[in-house]
Amino acid sequence: MVPVPGPDPAALEAALARELLLLVHHHGDADSVGCAIALAAAFPGARISATDGLSAAGKVMAERLEVEIEARPPASWDGTVVVVDTSNPEHCAPLPECNSVVVIDHHQTAGEWPAGTLLIHEPEAKSTAEIVTRLIPELGIELTPQMALPLLAGVYADTGHFRHASSDSFAVAHTLAAAGGEPRQAMVLLDRVRPQQQRTMFLKAAQRLKFSQEGKWLMATTRTGSFESGTARLMVALGADVALAASGNKKGQVRISSRASSAAIEAGLNLAQLLEALADEQDGSAGGHPGAAGFQAQGDPDALLAMAQQGCVAQLKSLAEGA
Image (cartoon, rainbow, N blue to C red; front, side):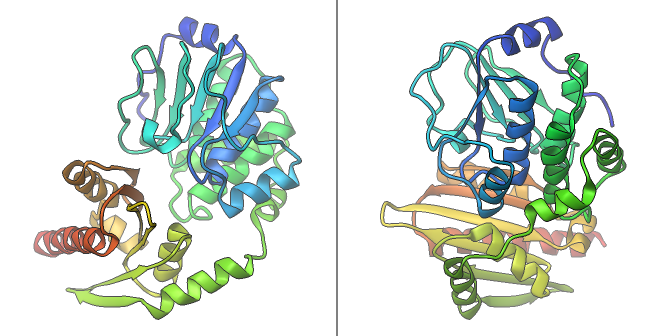
């Protein structure tokens, strides 16, 4: 991996020497929660907060590792706020008022963080857990099994069970296994029986599913009440090359989650680029990776879903023309 310039090491050490508040993104997933748990083990006394709840995988991980995660962060913080696996401040809002912020992230683009933020941004990493795995020893802290297990689970989850892993992902997994992160335990840590509410929502989304063929690519879209990312993931498992799942609430807040097959990603499809362009047009926010990205804004869910679909079709046509 090409080294990415990071913050001044002395400034980073000084920031991390203060009292730490570890912040996960909205609906914190296994990668975000796993990194926070590992950093809390590396820096005893650190607190972990979620600003908008945890995903099902994040909840299971926290419960099984018996780690307390506060429902909301304090309004202000005298020490350092460390934001993990978050590309944009809007995705962890409200950010506590503080004078010291460190962001550790691997998403494609970094948003506009407060002035003075120390940004550790490695967009080539397949998970933030890979960055944290390298960072902890660089800070002179020994990786322990308590750190290695949640980090290995984060790598496993964010690489799609290693389907989208790089050589660096496997090297990091080896490092974590050698440090006491048992691979089988990491996989079991993420195993869960989906709640009936979630399974019901998936089936309703399947009833509303629409698909089309764009050249050799199959595109699927649907509306759902929640669990957009899981819904999009399942549509790809059903056979779609590109999947878009949208939800909207009474306040006019719209969320779209997207997923793509390995073949579409290899051909050059970039969902993060697509949804970031839509976010710029609609005054929203977006982030993610070529094969998995999310979007949120105010508006009409059907209209925004149609716009995202049009953008996907345009990208797929350009792939066909370049083939």
